[in-house]
Image (cartoon, rainbow, N blue to C red; front, side, top):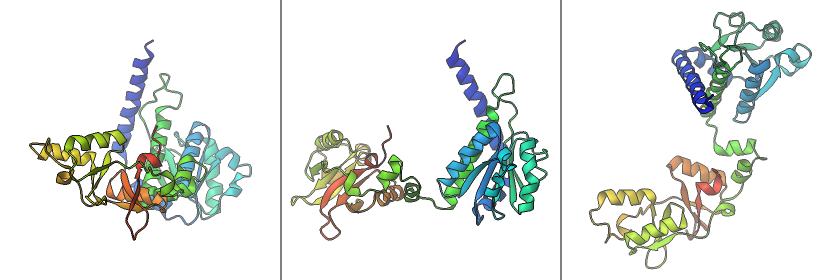
Length: 318
């Protein structure tokens, strides 16, 4: 067997099924999202088996991005774990068939508690769909498994739907990098984002003067590997900045770049941040202005450049 060829076929099959599902999404999603967004308590996700594993992942992703959530195994719920559920909770029940006895068994107790219910299922006409307030449909026509038995495409669809749920709620809550850092203080990214700009910036500042020729500007930008260089005036003060983008635009707009000087194509306005600012503030500034580097100043009064902070200093993409 050619495993590469077969793997590509499986990838393509699952992609096609996800596209079909995407085309079937309806207004019920808006209703489910609004229910969860307006919940005054938490979202409880329940499932068993492979669906339960997907539910556990969805719950963990939601909890880490601003939506209080826990996962409860539906079978264990019937043996005491229902005590984790409050009447003000919303419960998301995950079952591809929608007819799993373990899932159906918890419906009546949850209704007695007063919980509102959402189903995530591949069967709109299932017993589960008939019992809940809203159904999120994740049906696929066929599994990638050649026997059509092992949950493959169906669990992928649930996983992607969970991602959509998480991202929509993140955006609705305006969940930012600094919030992420607070929820992930033990991770590398969380530790970095809670540090100060001065802890991660480089003091090896790319620098040219206003009269530096184009070719020498390119050398400085390439040599320091930050995708930019500061431009100083005759007094040594920062007069502007040149980025990779400025270089590309100069090549397009000027006929004779050989005689071009830094002052001819630099950007005189550029973003600066205090060295004592949090990295979360720096990341937010980069995001708002669609840039990847910031000039770091000693203090607001002097505006003296102390270093350069790059997105790669904050997040290691390797």
